Length: 420
Length: 163
Image (cartoon, rainbow over all chains, first blue to last red; front, side, top):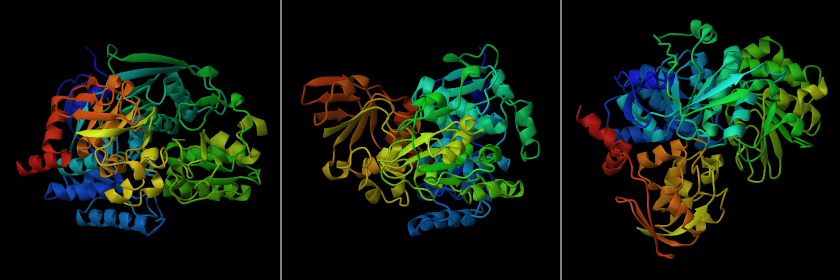
């Protein structure tokens, strides 16, 4: 019986020829990741294990990004605890403020995850790296602690749902719209405990940033991981970045899937997810008149240079609506610099938007753009739960960068077509 | 264990269980003081030691924040019963020793405020208020071992010390 790419990667990491869905395994990990919110708990738990040292100082990444730059004294203490742990154990991949980025943009850009790797991260959006053909999944702090000591993680081999995307994308439609549409179709627990394998001609044509966005939001359908078989686009992306040996796996033609879902992309418009679940998606033409107070472009979902270029192409020569605050957040310092050099930063600032240092900040209602009672935001982020970006009565509408930028100009949720 | 039930619906997410504005601490008691605040503002005041949370599908969806099961455990909740759990919450609960049970029939047969008795070893759930009995799905052997060891940290310590 054939194996899926997910099964092949997991089998290779637990010393087996093959694994079956439902099987519990201890898998060796190629990277263990944590941030300033989750790592401090992991560090406390790690101390309780009484391990002499971490399993491999090159295979741990610690990225302060959530409350960064430190938003208050308590957050500063958490960041300090992580930094001291990194120093004590000589962690190779600790990224200080000024050199850091949003972890899921930074880690693949630094070449720390490559095809065929197993990565766990104490952050639910760790599933992002499936875009380069790795098995990566979010876990909790205790899992992170145990993996830092043992170099292993317990995993249940997931069943796999295959998504086949076909058809040519309409203008302004990208990875964000495909994944929001998919979540709208299957629901926020439509892939619970399962792997989401994204395939088809549309995916083959999709650039890396769109693939990252899609895999990033697999968790919003309850998925264990999102994954895309590596191809020429993947290999081109990793060519200059790869620093360790990697393995390209592909699903067998006779691999067994729990379900196969075909999606005709030619009819998909830009999508908007209404409060308070990512599954509440509507095409932009059915949104109606939704006034907004804030527009956010950024996050681990849409903070890549291509996302910024897309937003800038809509904003160029225009002004943010007088009633709207627009906040643009690049994913990493490299992207920040690139945005400056390409003139994107100037477009944002001249339009009247904030152009910020990398941070997860507003996505989780942490800082740098928290909403007041009753305020509404359109955001390129990944969650629109109750109170996600601030006050419990505030609202978040999820969309891609072009819709967020067009909405910032119009003062209501709008299609980029409306301002052309 | 016996406790009074606080019942919730589908997709109770980790932002509702412990909002991000409180994630600048790792102290279990501070987290417990804000547990479930964005779905049920009164919860931290009304919860009593031993109480049980019962919820529909996909409990704990969203973020990987272990602060969520930590807050629930520190609030004194003895067990969470749901039709299904989001996968990160599920493994976090097992790893830190917060008892959870999957039992759709029990969720349908238990109302807010009911007195419920739970036997974690056998997975038997009794609604004392209505007199109904339910049987939760058993955990796979490896997870039973983790639970018996007192969570993942104890398991990892045993592994390290036996190396």
